[in-house]
Image 1 (cartoon, one colour):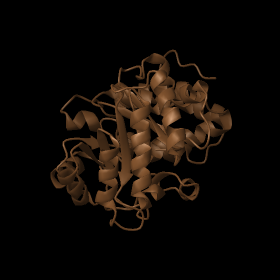
Image 2 (tube, one colour):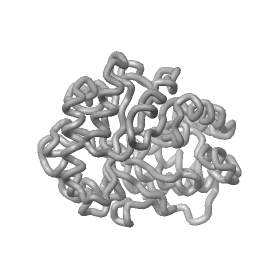
Image 3 (tube, rainbow, N blue to C red):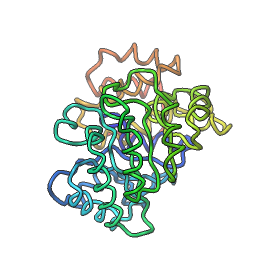
Image 4 (cartoon, helix red, strand yellow):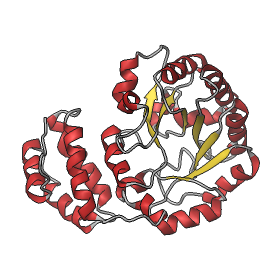
Length: 310
């Protein structure tokens, strides 16, 4: 989720519990081997055994179209101790697609195959390789061809976002289409898209036939969703208050002051789908652009001893 989920938000959400694995925001690969510092800046969990502070594995995701260059960068990630390598064939952003990255590659199943095969051959046998795809670009005509390309290339898992590139993020998600992939390819298939609550999750599992879900914006809107799916305790907004403070403290060390209020409002905008308290906070902060005033509001309304910001 480029522009939304980063390591500071991964840290906060995984503190809640219930999550088996995270995938990083995409790391764009063009025509060169990226230095280690780029990988550790985007995925600082690499510096602690590829795990969040809560111990949840984080799998870095690569985006690009050059099989050899992606393979070189995947090998670099493996050398840094990455839990695995994920490949992005799902991003619908026009800028990304215009530069031959993300979901537009689903028009070229043969290239998808060559990318996956090159990456699989470049990393040790014990390093998992996975991929995320959509149902297609404009239509679903190449759905199974791409799923087979990923499987035949050597990936052990494919996450299927149940919409086409042109669908963007508009409801509905066509979970029944994921069932076609689940019935065909001999690798793990994970369903993704439009899972906001427990009922959505149950219907997605039933319609897709999958045993696992990837929850993106749904987990950001409700960090307790994974716990709810597993009948684990979660105390709602009171449990989120210290995590919001924890997140602000970490985010503030990486983000310039002028951008911090926008980042908070972005998360609150999703949280208000689930929590009335987030709706109230969003309304009070919606027009605020001064980082110091936002921080003062947090200290007053979500007090947590020991908060320090940069």
